[in-house]
Length: 388
Image 1 (spheres, rainbow, N blue to C red):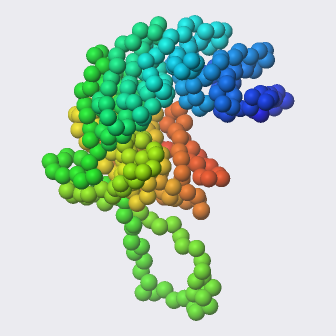
Image 2 (tube, rainbow, N blue to C red):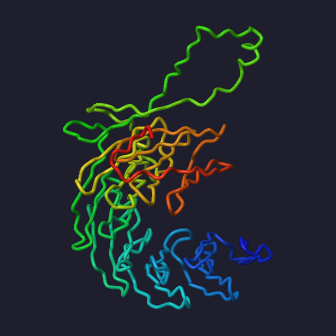
Image 3 (spheres, helix red, strand yellow):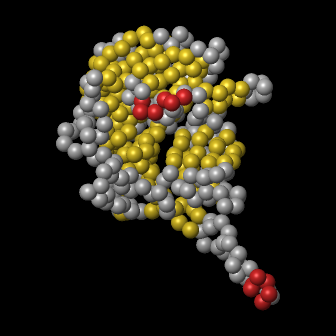
């Protein structure tokens, strides 16, 4: 069952019950006037109107939570379906929810789909068992087929740059490849090596504990006070970044060869708003985030954390990256440097984060609670200092 409420009209409520079909996943349409649900076993996808209670069905959606992408203007939806052991793309109008076109795609087991930022192309990629990235036009023509290698596990993550000129593909071979939108050929390949050696012009920041510097010379505590506070929980540990010299060996782990879905390859990837930087995490080195400069085609920085990186998100207004590791701290990077921010809330571990649209506020999530953090707007000048 799904329930929806109106923030402006408290008396308005909505309840959606799919009955025996069940609901595996639900999402909003871009206009917020419809809710899309996927039934259990991917039997059908249903579009529910909140205006006139009408509903439209699309049979055999490929995935429950993936396999759907909307154009930037919210006018069209591309929905992946599978029938007769073949994958198809259904293009629907988000105004009438009529199917505008259907075409088959050359995949063995389609993994996901994403519209380009300018809505001129659709990228789809195959399951990890088959390295295949396909770019289609909205009318069903295959514009390009990209395959970096044949043997071995293939594509893990795919992401368009916000400007629409670059398509980044992260693979299980621990390499990031960037394609251009004119010829759909790779123009950059970035390898995540466990040992970073010279010549390397990237700044390497490592998270270290900040030693407490307290003057205890004039402090006098009674025995009762010390005894009463002996089992008091420890306070926040202060941390800071230390700039490391190369060569440096990053902590890595080798995934077991006898288990599926190995933790290796580019599992996290995100573009900065201006499309100049892209951050990645190689899952076999989960404590390190790599920041690549696409303009210079080189590594800009590496942040080495004490704990595995849970999430990373770019400021929607400027090149500022914020990441979290499940600790009580936030970690930020700008082209001017990196710094750690302590969360003052007790017993609050930041496990996920999300920016609001104008970059003024950051939503921080814990397992059972959340908080909002006000973010200062960075000055335009490059003279910005992390001390600010």
